[in-house]
Image 1 (tube, one colour):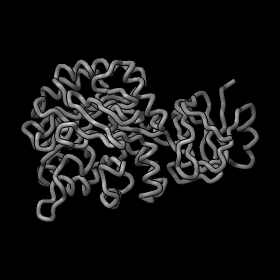
Image 2 (cartoon, helix red, strand yellow):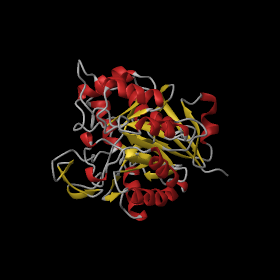
Image 3 (tube, helix red, strand yellow):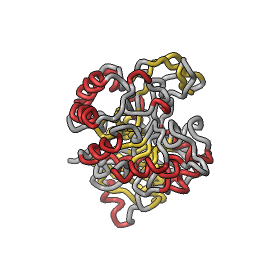
Image 4 (cartoon, one colour):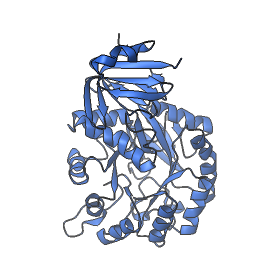
Length: 391
């Protein structure tokens, strides 16, 4: 007999809207049904099943983080395999059932070795792929990257990293205005790898050229790029206005003013925004001294900054906090928040046939939230990572 669990009585967020007093039926690790049950099939669906009453709660798809450098005290760039798994598990505890491992700038040979190592975890399904944030970025907008290791995006070197990932490279962030940038975008597009515009000093016109060449993502929009100007609109205007671009946003209250987030949603719409954490080791762990690649970072009051220079160095964000902030402080519709944390990144990564929404046949990845949008439960592939305590 199939292993069946019925989650009943919740507000279930579906691609078509919110099902009040809805249910999700999980069978053998997959979603068998989701929505508002019909009166005639209530008994049949629950026969022989374990049932969880989630009245007064929300059930939303598991979160998908396409830009994440680590957590739980562990780094995806430099940690051991066990460290990486620890970081992945930390984010699962906060609702991120699918995570892409992001690397910061490093020596080319080192990055290639890391890609080879972590590609095995991607093949095993522990992570959803690899993201190279650097070394092909602008020294003018380097943020928390070691300037001595930066280089122009030579297509041959970009190809080296793709090949090292053994089919698991999902995204490369580029300053596309640098020599070789446009050719590298075309190379990535030809190989089915996301070309993301970020850590860039590009003009509006240069950004448009990169989009036309095949770029489809803005790496943490607003951050590490020229500000929007009325005479020199720069990359932000080009990225917001083009329907081919999905913009990443770090919704932690530090990286973005609420008005900037509202502007992004107004111009990009709910289908072109992806919430990310850009998390580093301290996410889910605490304040203290850390390393981001070769650079020293101090985390104080939850904000990560370089010891030298004070630049923001990623975040300590988890996606459950981003969700709650969006639904409460930013007052975004819950359906829009779900698209930003689940459906949109899943579509970009090409895995929306398995995750990103609560639909029959997809993996049973879901998050239970209470009325205040606090996380109460996490299920991944039908197994509780955080079992709801409803006492």
